Amino acid sequence: MLIRKSGSLASTIASSEITPQHTFDSFKQDRRRFLTGAAALGTAAIAASQLPAIFHPQQVLAASAPQYTVPDPQTPFSKASTYNNFYEFGTDKSEPAKNAHTLHTRPWTVQVDGLVKKPLTLDVDSIQRYRPLETRVYRHRCVEAWSMVIPWEGYSLSEFINFCQPLPSAKYVQFLSLADKKQMPELPGGYDWPYSEGLRLDEAMNPLALLTFGMYGNTLPNQNGAPIRVILPWKYGFKSAKSIVKFHFTDKQPHTLWNEIAPSEYGFYSNVNPTVDHPRWSQAHERRIDSSTFPHSIATLPFNGYADQVASLYNGMDLRKNY
Ligand code: MTE
Image (cartoon, rainbow, N blue to C red):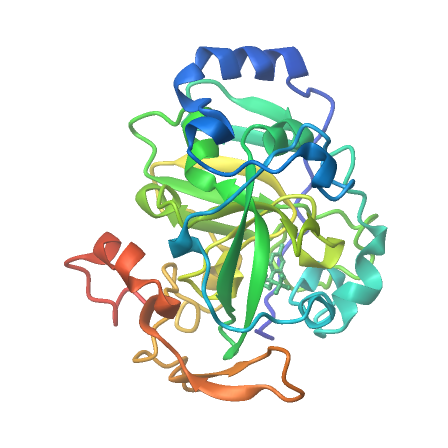
């Protein structure tokens, strides 16, 4: 993913008008039907005292359903946190881990705007506390044909989208990452910052799509997209935007950074598909980075092995055209 294009550095979001906690809380009360809690979900809640201190004391960790955990050997944290794509902190895989300490993840505000009942600006801690976090062990397949297996902490993006109350006319959601030259002195020129990605709303509502705050039982390291990102395990990794500052609901397919740079290489859908090669390399296999000393090659699965859960979203679509 080393194509460059001239573009402007978009301004970052002003954080002056945060929706107060009590407003968020009253929203939560208004939307009581969504507030089922860990017990009502039939999940095993873990005592707050057993949680890593770094999560909020009131944060409850819920057991995730079996379909959200693959049995594959996990990638060690030391690899998952040092081999990263986060171009805002440098384009080499080792750079984000070295450079991302300049990112300030608190306070952190998130805007919700576009086709929603009421635009909101929320504090990330309110969003994190909205639902019990689950640990989900997902395959993470990069378009560059390497993959990892990572335990993430979060809850289904659909729960947050329901909270946002998109209007019936909203058909897509766009994710916009922070772009702040002060916190990201390595921010490379030639890209149309901020990083942007997006999904059709029905894809975003699929329970697999994870609103993510942590990994390996702890908060996200900055280089992995702290304090809030999405994880979309059936899609190539570049769809999973990091360090999100805005959720924008729209009726048109949104701008996405890589799709605009090279539409023939990075489609809007970007579902993992071993039968559709990237124009410059095969997608039939991947180098699995796990606990073995060297990555080994394994066959790539359609939808990254999540076909049972997501293939129906694309019924009737030609996935060679809609790559
Ligand atoms: N989000 C932002 N804001 N900037 C990026 O450069 N890279 C994407 C995605 N999200 C990227 C991003 C790509 S190409 C991949 S493969 C994954 O993040 C990598 O996530 P990881 O470093 O946690 O493995």
